[in-house]
Image (tube, rainbow, N blue to C red; front, side):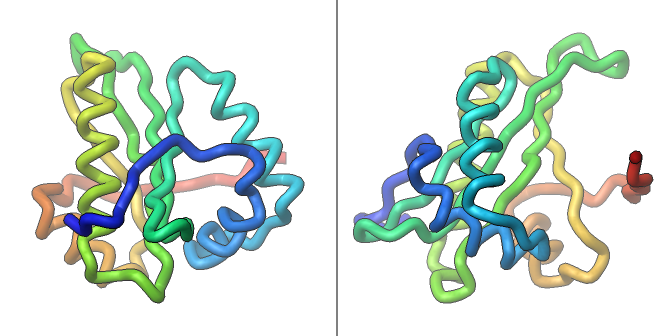
Length: 145
């Protein structure tokens, strides 16, 4: 891991920096929308949003959501978002973010961490497998409203 790297909770005041990262995931949005989302996550007891700060710059983010499950005795944790700025990839930042989210899931008593990812993200798939995730299924979505 990089010595200068710090993983910490994200703040609503950092919305502008988070917009660029979220756009790299393919979800363009506004700073106002992100600010409101971060505020909601702050007030949630089942979510956590962190950033990777590298020499004072936000270089990545990760979000975790925990929930009860009918399939398991313990809660499950979803890595609901993870992205490292394109300029900072392949430097250990993504792995540091995942490790922090795994520690958070363990603190919350979760029995597993899972994630979903777009079929087109072959580089992300290789990363997830490299750090110990196993492909177990497919994702289907349906927009509402």
